[in-house]
Length: 531
Ligand code: ADP
Ligand code: F6P
Image (cartoon, rainbow, N blue to C red):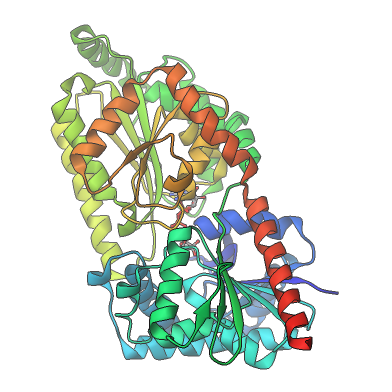
């Protein structure tokens, strides 16, 4: 039986060791898990291979068996990495070298030969784990920048097997890519796949330019088929990733998401009722994210509300502005442009004081890759900026920014999206950005404005958004102000066009298109070899 084997750094769920010595499985946050999770769930012939998220030294032999069984029940094959491997391969080469370099943060990139060694070792560990389970009719779909050597390692052992590789982050310009001391090896690694996928045609062009520069003897035809000097062919194309539109639209209408939405609207002074249902919805959400401590609403006691209303009516008598809500959802990553975004929000409060008391920013930003120093520094910077803005602009009963660092599950996230009059999505660089798409799905058939960075793949598709340069604080501030003021009719009209596209270009459509193209190029390659 031919199967699809997805291989990625992380599995859709990770294992966490808890303090009482047991383990809990946690849904992973990030574009890859969001895009491929539904496909894996729906296809019984699909196996997912990836890092367990835990070191084998943390568990006994007995536990290990239970853990492997728990993963097997979910059609996942876990790979266990030692702390040293995680440090060099994941925190080191993947997230301290390739991630910053590919996102145009070359000043952050560290070129450490030991990390490169460990990257090779771990790619080999993945190859060793896969070799015994691969059948010649299987299709192997390797994901992302963590595993760029794996296609070549598998190709050596399985010359005929169909291998696809997709990059979920940007591919940098040829000049930046070539500054990587191991750029040649990385290209050789991925070019052993039959099909290489990127989010945008710009990334495809950068990749082809890099191949041309590093392998001048290679050639590429008009269909994006690269021929290497050894006669091997690899097809290259853009496959913009989508979301499960109906899932987000439906979830945003669910009871829990709607309770969250009404609660947020209440707390932002948009409506006066539903506080109780919000409290219980938030309680349910907190139970879902049981591993996280502390609830961000705990200091909003009902007794505080008269004070809140009094202060609001005081500002309302100065101006009659309708209260508005801004939302954003991110991993705490320096590519997401959080400090710049916060500065733009602060500038808007300063430049347009009529928003004082009338706009609340719900900022959901979950810590990510905390073992990497630049991520810890960013967290400190964001904490400080939120504190500064809240300290400077707060009224007695109005806080401009609700800052939430817990990881929430899909229902509360959809509740937050649904509550947002404006979504502020301003990464400094991003391969695609699914958050922008999820926000629009949660506003299916209704208003809600998207302020979107021109530095992410999604900007190529969502051209009716308020497109901004995320580095231009003034521009983001003006766009934010306009997006808050836009009429519901204009917002709806903009959204309808973008939503129509998102309904068709879904995550399912993305994986089908990629896999069908892979099937075609592999079949064409085989018949060529036979001739
Ligand atoms: P990336 O892959 O770089 O994290 P994307 O925007 O492409 O960025 O995808 C992020 C995915 O993770 C989305 O599905 C989003 O809903 C989810 N996500 C991001 N941050 C959070 C968070 N703080 N809590 C819950 N889900 C989140
Ligand atoms: O989108 C890029 C990516 O690395 C994905 O592979 C992953 O889903 C996401 O970012 C989260 O990153 P990490 O697995 O390092 O937490």
